[in-house]
Amino acid sequence: MNVLFFGIAKDIVGSSEILFSDQQTKPTTVAALKKELIKNYPEFLKLKTLAVAVNSEYAHDDVTLDGNEEIAIIPPVSGG
Image (cartoon, rainbow, N blue to C red):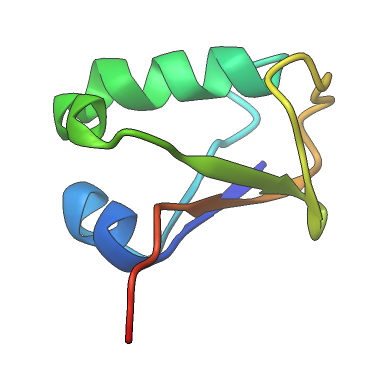
């Protein structure tokens, strides 16, 4: 499972991506992934919203993960 980070999410993690190896327990839902990220990176609690894309499609918390996905973590975006 490859997780990509953009914007402030990249700053929070300190990297543009993390890889869950086969030896690690992988989250089985988008909600579980969010909980894991908050546990490891508490700064995520400061974000009001957080979009997640699974294999290039936006995904809700109840989407099931099998561990082979490419996941993008997309924080709120502002601009002008």
